Length: 543
Image 1 (cartoon, one colour):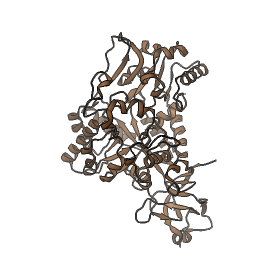
Image 2: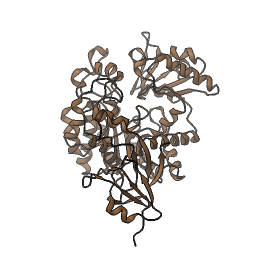
Image 3: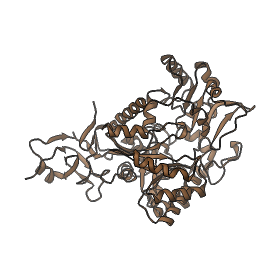
Image 4: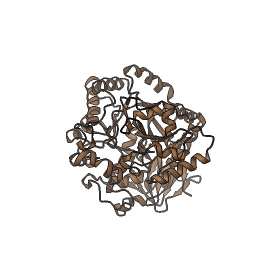
């Protein structure tokens, strides 16, 4: 006797992401897994108790997965002084003033998300903050979270003066007399961030659940949290994920990337192994280590093979947060223990150093199947593009960054020069060279919306922008972009029974109101998510 399906999706298009059967028209689900595809199967599996899910002419796809995100941090920022969505300094000050007035008992004013283009040179000052919050410390990371805007009270509390040296992994922006101006770059932000009161366990759990609701509404069913630890002046969210997973509150599937403390060395590897063993629970696993090898171009901390443009002042080629020789040894040891390594590698030197480390691990240990991946890849030297396939290293792309907008046009292209500017975000070149692509958002740095990311990957223009395409020769096809957010990120997340709609796979699914590929490419971003399912259970339904 045939056992009936629990759900059958009908009346729409199904994009399976399976090359053997790219499209079908119906899908049957039982006990959280796909059990039938196409009318012949699903008619036989339809019984009296089967729920028929009407796609209303829409499209069913595998659940989106974000391969590089900071979900708890993003959720916490949503509840604090949120400066996102504006590029106006006066508006920031208005929001900060209003938040401070509405939270008179808050010991610190925190939040963030401001954009560099709102201030001359991308450098806000403590004096501006002092006008609205003179009596309490303020700590506001910028949109890319590689710097923080602080007020005089915060500088005084941290003891930062003209005599304070720059940390090895950051820079204190200073006036002509050496006094701090209120902008702290990279590791210098930790000089103040370490004094910010840690959120309570309850606040962290609320932040995770707040993020999860939003991410499900965008069709995201799984992600890799790219900073699980106390790096960058933040807070460790390992316990938060474990608590949520153990209590059955984690409806998404999450892989945690354990933070590599760049101020320490190999002595931390045993600790990471212990955190992996005791931190995993339910739908959360902690089998990855995150190594941040460089910074970002805008503040000239991204590691480059040649110095930044000379008109930037002091000649620099950026930073390597981990010594490249030591990096090869560390990655080899982590690979031997079965860890996946998740690199932040943005500049061409950092990309090469990360690939060299993966190559050293393969030479010592052989192919491991640990699925190491490099995130961001803003500037990649042409010689290194073929190495991704040769080393089985995944290219983890953030498509929303590959577009003309003020941070690119005013703060990036001028400091790297025209030749390197033409090497940015080489998605098509990586794909043509056989690299496996995964995709993520780096939220809260940019929007976590995968549909917007696919739109930019295909068009190289932000949704609703009137700008020219950014390096249009690096566009990728819609199917390639969709695969990066489904099968590619599922590969990175070690979720092999997700990412495609095939018999036996988990029913992590998204319903779209249309087929994004059926209309003009410039209309992809108009697509809406109408429902999201995890193991056949609805975790989001559009109102």
